[in-house]
Image (cartoon, rainbow, N blue to C red):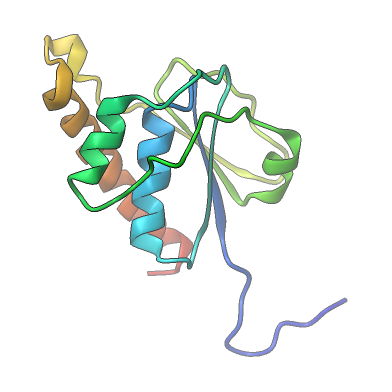
Length: 144
C-alpha cells in the first residue's frame, strides 16, 4: 500500500448534478473551479442531459470572470460516481440514488421563479445562492 508523505494528501473531488447539466450544476462547477484554483477536482453532469448550456447561466458566470462557454451537458456515469468523494445534487428535479462510500448531499437551491422572478435577475439570485454553498463546501473539503 502506498504511503502518503507528510504534507501531501489526495486532492478532494466533487460531482455537481442537476437534471439537464445546463444550468445549476454548471454554475456550481464553474464557481468551484474558480474558487479552488485546482485544489479540488470538479465534475458536473445531468440525470437527463440537455443539448446545450443555459445562456443565462453562462452569462451570469461571465459577470464574475468565470468562463464555462466550452462546457457541454454530460450524463452521470458510474465511472465519475466511483471517482469522486462528494456528490451534490442541486435542486429537486434531478433524482439520483446515493452512491456507496461517497458523501451525498442535496442542495434545495433558491428558485426565484417561484416568486415571479425570471430572466437574468433569477439567474443571478440562483448563482449567488449556489456560490455561498460552494464556498462552504470548498472550506470543508480543504479543512478550513
